[in-house]
Image (tube, rainbow, N blue to C red; front, side):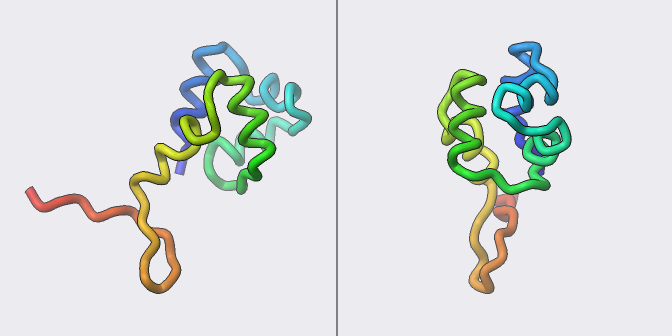
Length: 84
């Protein structure tokens, strides 16, 4: 799952992954993993990224979560699309 809002705001500010990572003490590889959703994101890092990108953690990182649901077996799965 790509964190689209993070990527969009980063690119609007003309920041590379390395530049953003340098600003918060993270490597380019870590920032790439965060942006691609392959690396978990702790609250403090989310706050640091949000401050730099000009938003709140909720605005930047929660839009993707609105398309997911917690299944009864504990798995997080995409919401089904309504029937047309």
